[in-house]
Image (cartoon, rainbow, N blue to C red; front, side):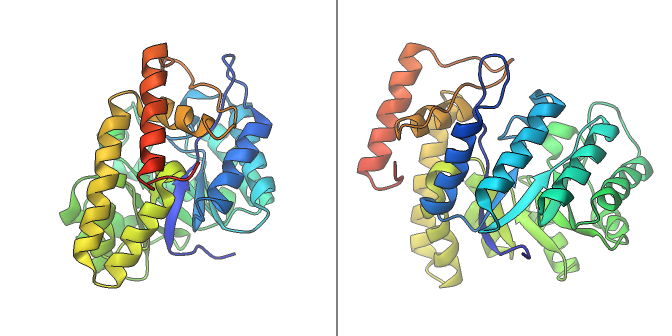
Length: 298
């Protein structure tokens, strides 16, 4: 399957307190995104899945369960990036074997790698997977930003297909889309979904689409139709929810609300802390409020 344009959920992952993937729950959460959220695709193993906190076995298990549950119904991207390149290559090979449509990799972080080293990293992983590679661009977390000429250098490799662009620098996003019309750019900030779509993004990947996929799809559609007032209203609703959820802890709150539907969403990996009882009650109340407002479907 080729990558489809539209809304992709960055898949949440349920863990036990020992860091083990809750396999049945993960399958149920993936199924929920496909059948209830009607997402256009899934982004597996990224920040929302707490990949950078999990061990290699957990990363592999997540890729396997998501692929098996999806069974070719929607587009799937595997985030394989790791500061441990051997691990990243193992994940690349697995993603290919499981039938993923593309891979993605976070820019190597912590150490101050030069741009030549970063290019080598991406080219090596793309070749290991032999699949289209999306550069996971999130400079606020990695400390590395690219200009247009550096993007051009990355795109010299035929497998570098585009960017998962998670930055508030909309000027560079637009310049990237305009300079490379044959490449794919996904908007990575949920709170800037409307902006990304208006600037020509191919799709959007986000954490909150685990709950708010149909609102995100409405924003996307309304921009296409030129209904900007409706799109802005949808973005305002989504952003209000984002503000409320992040005050509790975004991933923890998303999991707590989804658990209302009967799925055991487990916990987040440390050093994330669990919600207190008071925070759980607030998250549950938000979930009921969003359901009453028809912002989510539980």
